Image 1 (cartoon, helix red, strand yellow):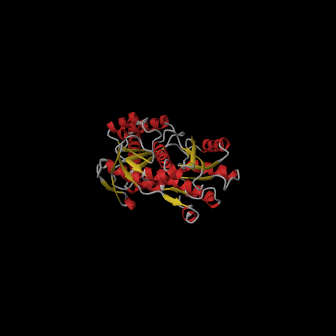
Image 2 (image 1 turned 60 degrees about the horizontal axis):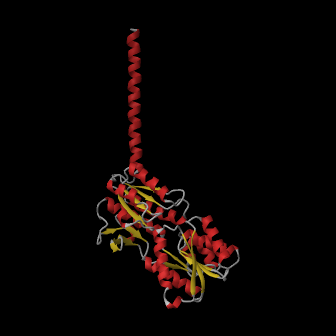
Image 3 (image 1 turned 60 degrees about the vertical axis):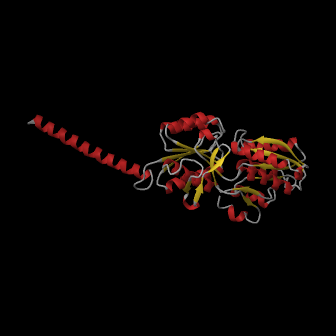
Length: 351
């Protein structure tokens, strides 16, 4: 009798544990489906990798990317290395390959250096595209470009020439020396400078702040010390233009050295208002990330392959077409937008 009672007691405990485990498993599955997006989604995971952490432009770009992927009912993975290095991005890409994500959107720290690992990702069936800072055509299916590189480069020279009355020394404060978008814009700046209209403008140096605030500040201070007659700094990077403007403002050099380039309205409003930067340009990084997110989704769903003539719908932005470039294909967001004292108040609280 005692043995039967012990057996019955153990049996009750065993059945109770089984029921509890079954309830826990059901709850876990329910939570996972909620985390992955809207009800009934296909469970795709789309990753975006920016150049480095702590970059306001990158944060806004990834915000737009996440919005697009969430609207599509999928999961967005937002990653960036601590420093803007190829090695840091390679490590992240390897991790994403092992996780077998559906797509990787890369904002490249190097044009060619990521090719082996991105090719590996594509060989594993992962759709790869670049945005903002391109990787080479063999490393991706399509590039999401913010605007025409020629227009971006030329317009910055046109702007700085007007600011300094077509005469004087200028310098460029770029991001990293390997950044493909920066380098292409600078090439077009140099091409524009060959025109007779700019014969009295001298480009004295191209400096690199590596899209790091402290280094960009140091590079700006070095430019001012090396070239006491410097009239202007062009910084085609949101980190660089804000850093250069702060140095000029802190030193009380308003009116002596002007700054222009590509900047975030929220960071540049005070410098546009105090005259350090008469005006500057940019596009909406949120829209750029949003467009990249919808392109990644279209590739993963095989609605497009990245070939010339492919079209897809990018949510609130409307329809876009894949066009041909010298190295692969791309999708253009639009033209650069001018921010000046007349409109900066409208935009400084937006992004």
